[in-house]
Image (cartoon, rainbow, N blue to C red; front, side, top):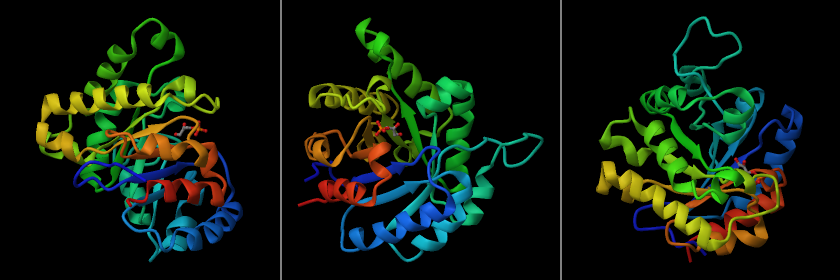
Length: 258
Ligand code: 13P
């Protein structure tokens, strides 16, 4: 059961990372849709690799499952070899985009400066951005978690109009919990998510009540209920456990309001 705040619809998004060919994606979605067809009051998204997007938009049409991309360039077009823009995504019918995932930051040189441009560019194009933030294990041990989160949230939202802050989804993904099986404790998750909401409130109290803040990092069907019941947790960004239709559907069930 989810304890999402007033007016905030719980949101479960599956980040497939670099997994699933088009045929594997089709197989997954055929198995997922019947499992989530009767779910109410939860927003559900899959975030496949670019090449699967068209197939997933077509296969989910008329269902409650939305399709998000995993990254985009801030410019609408131009000489940026290998990149994909917001208008390319919206024309396909993609609903939103993950931005600033720690794997993009750590492995592909994504910077806070680039995210300053990407987040408002996504909003302007009509995409829902999921801005990812989170500390390393060393930063947590050094007592630097809040400093890191403050920096990432303030930078990522710096060029977003105050009146649109509530349209940005923020995912707190402690890097030490990603793919490690080491999920944050409920206390750690609530503390970080409450802090993130307070950072948004520093810009706009009203918008902070609309902002959906997700937890990500080793979320599975077995631990989702406890995390989703926390007051500031509005949903989950799920990696490994989102690759299996039954496991992902069970997490969606855990987010369903009573
Ligand atoms: P895992 O759920 O595999 O830990 O991955 C979390 C994540 O990075 C989602 O974006």
